[in-house]
Length: 461
Image (cartoon, rainbow, N blue to C red; front, top):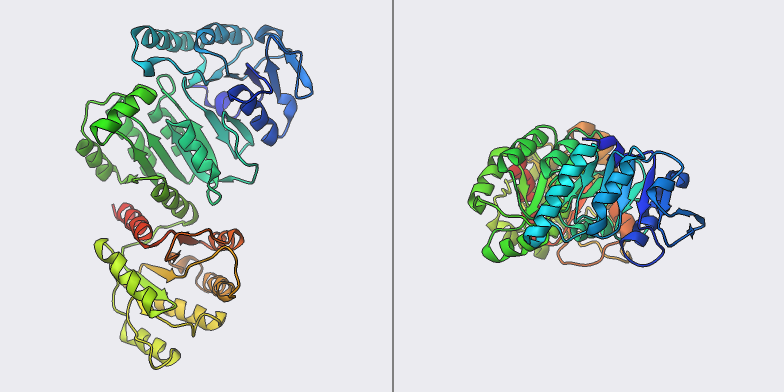
């Protein structure tokens, strides 16, 4: 497979380039918004002479140089002939946005996709798609994606493979996620999901792999691929098709038909240590957590520190249905906290530490280190609802305390999480400061505890 020419091409031609809304216009705008050298991108459209201030060629054969990657934004009837024309320009890879192939289930469309795959193999052209939305390579600033999104910094270490382009877009639009790649693979009958998983498993810029799967066509190949990837880095996924209704939906989406049960699939995940998430909220927070921590929590034992008794009680109630433990503090730690908290403070885990420690960064850091160094504690959960507008400076002292803890403990620092007690928009600057310190802001309790349960289960596989 020609992975370098596909994902890291030196030259790119957009076939069906235009300035209108839709895939042909969106991919041109996306490429221009990120690529370091716009001269590497060529436009092809028989009805245009100029696009975006550049020459627009009427055919692939008119292009003045060889092309690594063809981005084909035309209908399915044109694709095979365009691949043959691209072969004359030594094209080694192609992205095919067109839909209406095997996913329709019609014999003629299935046959057309089979012919497409055979043609690509004969021409030695690696195909992403058809029926896909392309990819974004954030490490090399190549945004060959078919949907527009806000321009901002997204470079990170999360690698995504999604059979759904819109799910990929939703992940890209989340302001707290940072990526190496987001790849929409569509029908994936040429460049398959297992092949892409292995590619990201070997990619040094990718620290955690996230998958959105409609259906799996080759279960043994998928098992081997995720086992290989899981031996190198965390893997999390969302998979549709757990019931009859979603199986019908996924069949219509990417033509996915499976011969195994959801119980069989869950057994495969248990065997390989892959994390299965129920929805995008869980998925995003699992990926973010794995992307920022060198090591996930060593176990499921939590020390919960809260600013009030009500919050401590909510933690106790919400966590009861999850496989998490809240060990009692040792006598030494209990005495340490009792000496520093008001006499009305109840020293327990979850802890109501009142606001006493919250406005003294050094004292809070000392307390965190003392609690963290207990052998029976695997992680710290800090109960605090971070708001959009910060009026109370408490979070500033907390951030300073986390910096002190990181400097003092280095590699011995255990994971710290902040849990909001309700869904709300958070102060983005504070969230980014916390994430840079390796402190992850979780969603509200039931989602937050679900995420902690998933990552600790995976780490202890």
